[in-house]
Image (cartoon, rainbow, N blue to C red; front, top):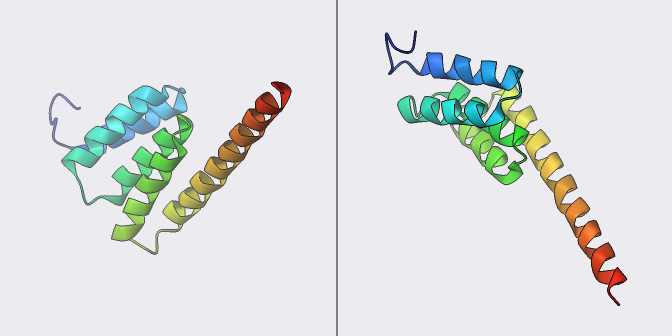
Length: 109
């Protein structure tokens, strides 16, 4: 399908979802980026980008993508939930890294 119409963002969006389903997060991210490049004003592209970044534990980038989608549609409940999830996971990751760093530094005394 992509070969027949390489400028149809829907194909890349759907393929991104397929890559996510098989845990191929890097390829999902590549297709999400293509989706956003082709159709910059489509909230689904922002969603795909946020989901792929979240799976790759790029929490700040994922939250930024979800936020971008909400700038286009501030009533989108799916993007609101996703943004909250990105922030929550990002905070958790930050505090876990901080705790690990503190434990290592405390052991060096």
